[in-house]
Length: 125
Image (cartoon, rainbow, N blue to C red; front, top):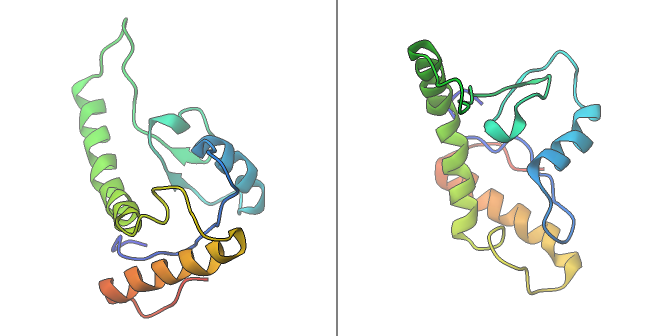
């Protein structure tokens, strides 16, 4: 959301570590093809994601590319702060030690608590 203070969607993952890019590639087929997204450098080359410019050994970034990267980072920082808020509860940051079937309700409660703390009116689903 434009304010950066909304949790719009919660996708409860599978057990074990999974790369963000792999999750994205599995989810993008269910999304509208005309919709565009913001991402970080791991998503370079993905057609629907606007990513920052990467420098190479042969070609450093120009001043215009640095300004564009800074602008993209200023938009993305809100997402990073929300992820940090989730990790404070340690449900998404560490190994979940309760029964597997209780993970979904617990993560949704944590999202609800964060939304309540931020003053959001709509609950996670």
